[in-house]
Image (cartoon, rainbow, N blue to C red; front, top):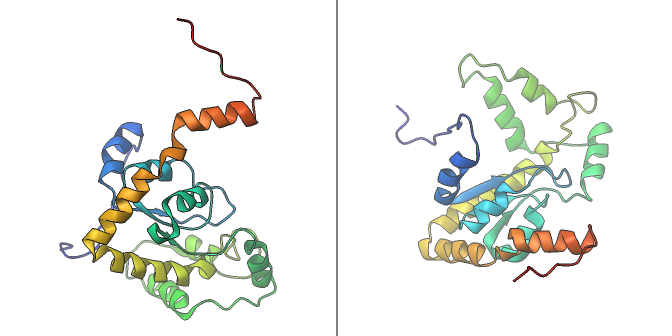
Length: 201
């Protein structure tokens, strides 16, 4: 029944052992956290090292991944961390007008197309101007149009296999910054203020 449709699979008991199988087989990593929330952590680095391209916001390690891979090999969308407070304030004041496609998507979900499941709590978080669990705190409505644009860009990139492979190779080749050796050396120098001790012969 779903042979020609997009399949969404939730991996049960996801852990490092599962990641060792899953990450090397990934072509595109979606890091869709709100800029400035530092929710994009270490998994996106592992995807990059294994040749996956990234579609994401300028959040967490995404910033460095884009710097290392190059902007032509990273699909960037969404607000920057500096823009988020202003977007939230506009929402609080009732001045934010959602993109028509975002509103249409919300209505589509409300129509019951996904069966008997209720998405009331989730959709409620994206509505209203302020209040606990309301007002789209994570600015999904703002980021949504540029996310769709970048998904189209992903599709176009994928249609050119040679171009995609070049981007994949460059992601892997430029992922050295995320090695544990470099990270520990930087922590030792900048945070712990300690110097290397030569190993005994």
